[in-house]
Length: 200
Image 1: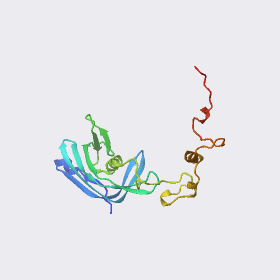
Image 2 (image 1 turned 60 degrees about the vertical axis):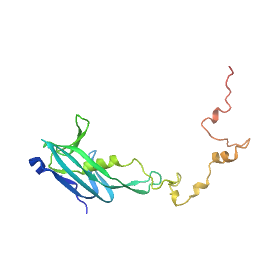
Image 3 (image 1 turned 45 degrees about the vertical axis):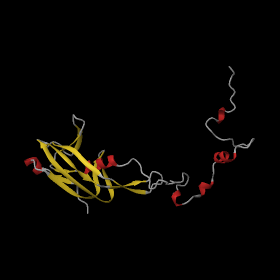
Image 4 (image 1 turned 30 degrees about the vertical axis):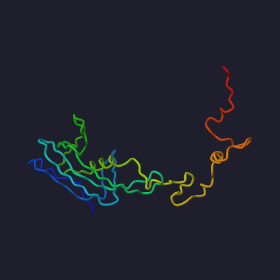
């Protein structure tokens, strides 16, 4: 079961009392660049949030979120589960004119989550926080061999026929280049080898 990450702030706005929300999420749906996006998790991700009044229309949200992202191994594209422990903390400001929650930068440089509906949907905020906390790339194992660049075979499952095709350059490295052979080592500077320069 997945709860929508909402926190009800109507009472807080009227009486300055605290607000609390918690639940478990198997995904987050949010809008980015005018398109609906979905962030899915490998297992239910618990979240907990508390909001305290700072006076007037401003308040502070704090809590934690523990999603397990499913990412692709950077070498072989296998699925990798990436558990995250995220500490939540952001300023909030109530603005009845705001049609949807959005982030803006305060004079102090801090980000403020501006919202107009007291029934605040935290989906976009949690999604952005998760994406910022996620690593740029992951490996399913430190010694991952990746994919064959010719046929795409997963080399972690064993060699493929293309691994037997050793480049001439590697043979030359091991045995040396026999004099008079046609296949001289190919380097970016091979054409300069016989260039004659004027003597000073």
